Length: 333
Image (cartoon, rainbow, N blue to C red):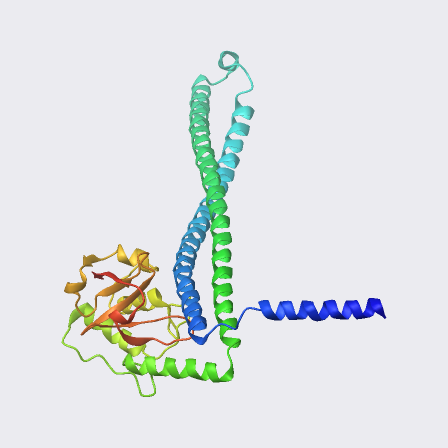
């Protein structure tokens, strides 16, 4: 009994200590701040993912072309070897006796000389075929080396792509887990705040998306028309449309509709056009945010842009000053 009483007392004391040192539940503001930070980190990772994805596709296309060259080269090499074997057999059959002896015993010297000339042509053809064979073998060896290097690089890119994808999924899962820990009342507050924010950003899509009716003409107008038509479609990371977009997927698709091919990721899009200062932005220009340029939208005028924000949101119109990160500038195409 004494032992039992002591153990119970110790358990009670331990429970009291644990209770006294338990971390308080995070506040709604703290949860929102962490969720926003995780989503921001995820978006930066998404642009990395897009870059790896683009590189993977390029490497795979290149590797396929090299493999085709290797196959074609092997076929040509086999054909040359067959042809060389035929010539070698012909030379062996007709050139097994010393030429002087053949001439001495020939009943028709003219016929012999004609045959000797043909044998000389066979020897010359054989030499040329040997040169071709050696050249083809060198090219084939080079192509095989290039194919091996390309496939090794593709393997590295595949691993990086998988790691980046896993990191994105982990960040988004962490954000969702934090939201799931909120009480029903707090979750209602978050939803209400998001709805109010969407309303203040002039977007949302309870009504049909407005069509572009601005004064801009030419390719910029075509890009803007496309962007306006996507309002309300969901943000889908890694997507370039037509049912969903991420940030650079939207801007790339908008300008593709205008006949301009842009790189896949925001950082590469920044390097693809003519740089524009914030003060000189015009409708149709792309506008970039954060020091690492991991977010991009399409400027529509009046200090606003159309962009694909992040997971859980839709393509929307947003004042460029509403972003957490600074405006780094724009590009014109």
